[in-house]
Image (cartoon, rainbow, N blue to C red; front, top):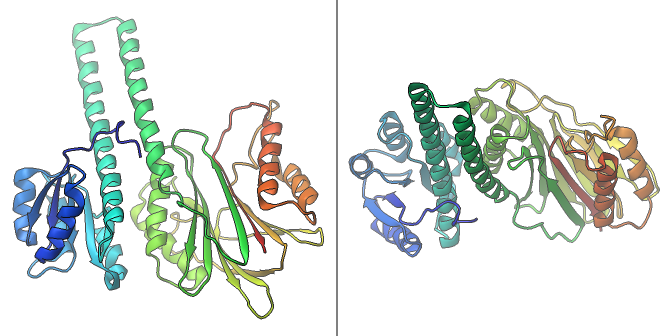
Length: 416
C-alpha cells in the first residue's frame, strides 16, 4: 500500500479492552508505526474518551463486563460526534460466529486473539487509509459546494469553473488510484500450493476500481473453496460490494456449499439497500479422493457464466450453475452441482468480462470465440498458464485496442 498517497502517520487510535495485557500488546504493535495510542479499560470510559479526543480508529474488545463491545459500538454510532469512527472488533477465536452481529452494529473489521502483529498493523493501516479517503472525499465535496456557491455569488465566467473542475478531477483520479491499490490488497496474496491441482488466476479491471473478485479458501479438512465473482458495474459501488462479499464469505461457517451461498446472499441483502447493486458469485469446492485419484467438485452460486471443463480426451463440457445473483433477494435458494475431474482435466471459471469484449464492429467475443479457443486447448499438453494466456490473447486480438468495457477475471486449474 502506498502510504505516501494517503498520509496516516500520527493517526490517533483508541484501544478498548478490560485486560491490561491486551492493551499493552496492541499498543506496542502500533506505537512503532508512529500512531498515537489512547487506551480505555471499559466501554463507558471509551465513550467519554472517544467524544473528547476524536480518535481516527477504535480497536474494541467484544467481551467486557458491564458494557460489551456491541453495546459500546451501538452508542458510538448513535452519537453524531463519534459515528464516523471506524471500529475494528477484538475477538477470541471461538467468538467469530458472533461477528455478523459486529458488522450489524457498525463494525468494519475484526482481529483475533492471540494477536499477530503484522495482521494487526495491516488491518489498522487499511482502515485508517479508507477513513482518510472517506474524509478526503467528504472534504472535497464540501470544497466543491463552497466553490460553486462562491461562483454563483461572484458570477465568475464558465472558463474559471471549468478550470476548477479539471483540478478536482485530477485529485479524484489520484484518490481512485489509491482506492485501486486498496482493492488490489483484497485479492489473495498467494495461490494455494496443493499436490493434486495447479491453479493460475488472472484479473484486469476496466477502470481504476473494479467489481470482479476471486479468492482461495483452504479448509481445515483439506478441501479448497475457490470463489469467483462479479459485482454489478465496475466502479466504486461495485468495489464496495466486493469488499462486503469478501468479509461475509470469510465469516460464513456453513460447511454445506449451497447453504453457504444462501448465507452469504442473506447477509449481502441485509447490508445492501441499493436495488441495482448485487453480486454474481460462484463457489467451487475441490476434494481430492486419495483412493480413486479423482477430484470431486461441488459448485454453487448465481449470475455467473458457466464453468468449462477441458477433458483429457479432447471434449469440452459446459457446466451451468443456476441461481440468482447474491444480494438481490434475501429468500433466494441455491443448489450445488456435482462433477468429477480426472488427472490432466482442466477447469476454467470466469467473469462475463471476457465474453463481452467488443471489437470495432461492436460485436461481442461471445461463446463461439471462447469455445474455439477451449477446443484447441482441450486434450493437448498445454499448461494452465498457456491456456489462460491463449484466452486473454484471443480476447485482446478480438478487441484490437477497443476499450475494455468490463472487468475480466479468469481462474484456470488443472488436476495433477
